[in-house]
Length: 155
Image (cartoon, rainbow, N blue to C red; front, side):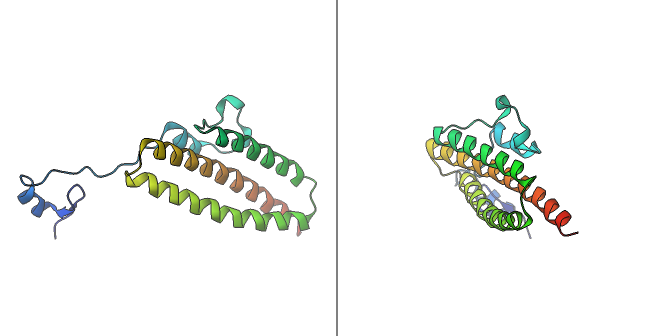
């Protein structure tokens, strides 16, 4: 069995016969901007200095990021003095929200991978993907801290 050629959708042996008859269509490739790659390398976004924050194209996402950042910082501070019942409730909410964030992130990644978007659609989806990645990072960080608090409170 021959391997498929992703440029033509045919096997390599079959595509050799048709190369003269058919133009090769490039396989859509999704290019991540540097900020998206950098977000993956950051351990805790809350520890970043302002000049290290991810750059967003859309003004609404810049503002959304700032609100999200202050919300997560406030929750981390609250976590130090929070009652166990409040931590449990927030843990459930954040765990459920994390599922939605990840679903949205996957949708944006898949849309960007199709290669059929206009430049403005691509820019918008890339910005939204960046927002999802940032929110996912902060949510995971908070959930991990809540798990520690819940475990230590049950002893």
